[in-house]
Length: 137
Image 1 (cartoon, rainbow, N blue to C red):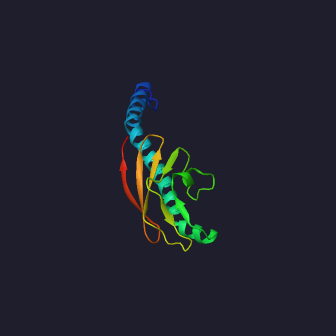
Image 2 (cartoon, rainbow, N blue to C red; image 1 turned 135 degrees about the horizontal axis):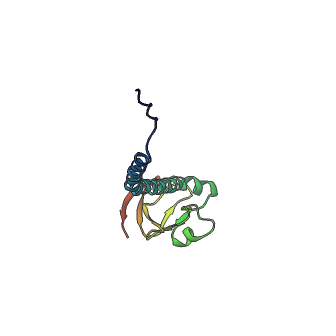
Image 3 (cartoon, rainbow, N blue to C red; image 1 turned 45 degrees about the vertical axis):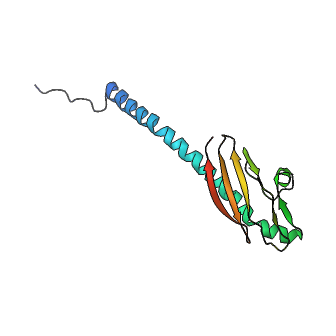
C-alpha cells in the first residue's frame, strides 16, 4: 500500500521559531539604527548652519553694513543665522563681519535639546567655519 503524500508547507511551530528569531534580531538592531538616524539628522542640521555661516560675507555686502555677531543678533527675528528647531545658537565672544565681507575670527556654540553642544570656530578673513569639538551633556 502506498502512503498518502505529505502536505507541503511549514508547521505552526516552525513559523513561531522563525518569528521569534526575527524579533530578537530586530530588538538588537533597532537601537543602533535609531542612533544612526539621530546622528544623520544632527549632521544635516550642522551642515545647514555651516552653509549659513559661509554666507555671512555676502549678507553683509548685500546690506552694506557690518554684522556684529553676538547673542542679541542671534536671538533676534532678523538674524542671518537660523539653527533648526530644538537648537540654540550663541556667540560667547562677539565678532564682526564687515560690509566688505571680511570676517573677524569668532566662535559659535550650537546646542541641541538633548543637552549636547558643539563649537564652530569661524576663521578670518573669509568666515570659513571649522568644527571646534563637541561636548557631551
